[in-house]
Image (cartoon, rainbow, N blue to C red; front, side, top):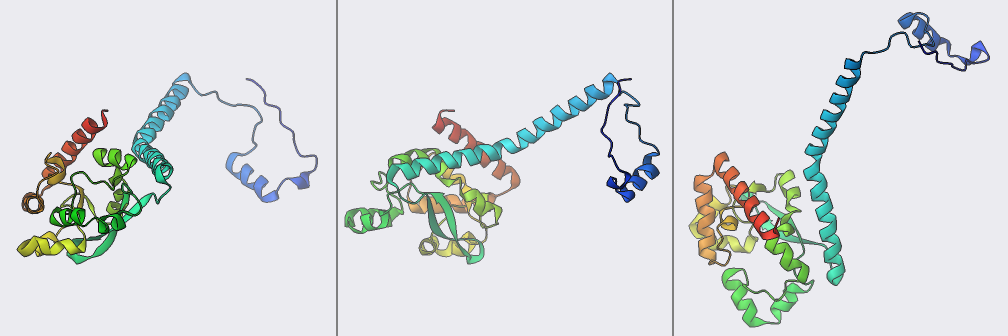
Length: 244
């Protein structure tokens, strides 16, 4: 057996009396040499456990790390583009009429509201459908973020705190609720979602009334299977748009 040399304290008082008693009571006299060399099987098993659990930990954390890295890159691009704020806080009316702010990466110029007010024709079109087909307020980085839906990544925090769900009706501003008419109460019965039937329909420029019908169809047919199918379709759309 290979001997291990150790440096012992020069004086007995340097060793804690309680520690010494504990070691003696547990192990008797502690040898300075390796008493038993573990088998090769022990080392192989230990290494296998290390590798397996490390890989499992990496696989579990990888999506989180990728999301964090993507958010940092996006934030830097937004800031470098025009120097404006990185996040946009949009007031939303959610389940049971509770109001909150949905987080999004900013995709429009900082003075987007003022720009719309200065262009009455654009304002009129926006109020008709709450959306502009070719919105001149969208920034260069914003176009890419909207095309890939990466601008909605921060809404995962809204999901974590229970304000939103991954799948559900579209998020709407409180001023939009009257447009749901007799379905307003039904609309407020569920949490709004990051994605939903409208987002995967491939018909992004349909009328507002049609978007309302998509929300109602989801509420009537919602189930775990439906939600999973929508999430898978959303992932497919995301991959196609990003060219992954």
